[in-house]
Amino acid sequence: MKTLSLSLLSIAVIAALSLWFVSAAILPEMLAEAPISAARQALLSSGVQVGFVAGALLSAFLGLPDRIHPGRLLAACATLAALVNAALLALPVGGDGAIAARILTGALLAGVYPVGMKIAVGWGVQDRGFLVGLLVGAVTLGSAAPHLIALGGGADWRVTVLLASLASLAAALLALGVRLGPYHATSPRFDPGVIGSAWTNRRIRLAYAGYFGHMWELYAMWTWAGAAMAATFVPELGPDRGLTLARLATFAAIALGGLGCIAGGLVADRIGKESVAIIALAISFASALAAALAFGGPAWLFCLVVLVWGASIAPDSPQFSALVADFAPASQAGSLMTLQTAIGFALTFITVQATPIVVETAGWPVLLALLALGPAFGLVAMLRLRRLTAGESASG
Image 1 (spheres, rainbow, N blue to C red):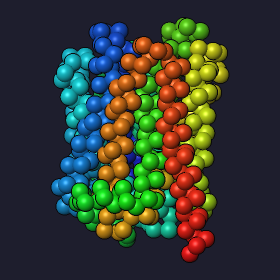
Image 2 (image 1 turned 90 degrees about the vertical axis):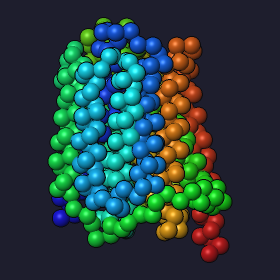
Image 3 (image 1 turned 135 degrees about the vertical axis):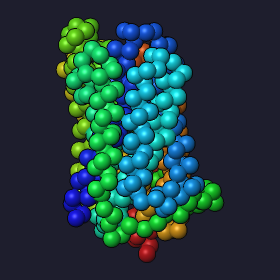
Image 4 (image 1 turned 180 degrees about the vertical axis):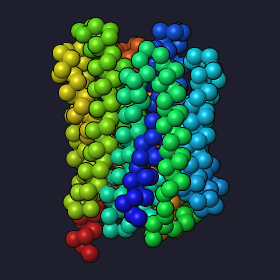
């Protein structure tokens, strides 16, 4: 039952999360049909982050996963998200309605990702690192999916939108077959008082800092990697081959991160969650700088760097949540993870929104180098956390 439920859950999350980056995947075709300003291009993607933050906080305040069976809640949110995404077919391209639809899609996906994580951790305690890694790996693979779907949709971006909506409807059906594990427990509603704990508990504060550094680069890279690769591939390979390769490479880069989450989860329970995060952050930092240097060079070199970056940018993500759960009092764990996620995704709005503006004024190499600041900050925080926990173990 555990294997079946986790398999159904993972596939459902992959299918539903294909809605997240739909606008980024179809942007070239949308631009060919109608002019969209750089700010509106960013809003089509960053609006999902804004909606997600609002949806996650609202769900936590209302205690929805505790009042409604999590599998049914996930199914309902995936269904509604599919319908809202399909509204893009009728709305003006890049207009206010389309941006509003992306914000609402993000809010509904808050009923998929966090709820899926809650279901996953209900199936074990000793293998928590793996369970969270499996769920975040599914989220990552789902985030990669629109770039592959866009290839199937061809030149008509509306086919991609329709296919992603159908995938989310399929996710809803799969979610209805998911069962709850023996360790499933209710989580308290968000407690504003945990803000004090997040600041005064040094271990939680450092885990937060590592997560914020990670989020600084993550969604900006996921959102705009395809555009960056198209910008360097098209001049060398031509528009058709260049755009196709950019989409395939973007899918592969993000998908490798999903596989890395699962692999990282398998070893995190053995070598330590901090160690997995440190390794991933160090490679991601080096990759961002290498991407800045390789941009505009040979297509194969830039592609290789982005693939390494994609593989290293995600495996630390589930470990930050697991660390907060480890360090927090049981009565505050749910609220502290909600606060962590909300602030982290709010931060992604800034970087996703700023990316096309920085690129327009300073160019891709400057933007890619600026993204390296995030993992550098997170790396310092995690090294301090490992020293702190090692010192506590030695003194204990």
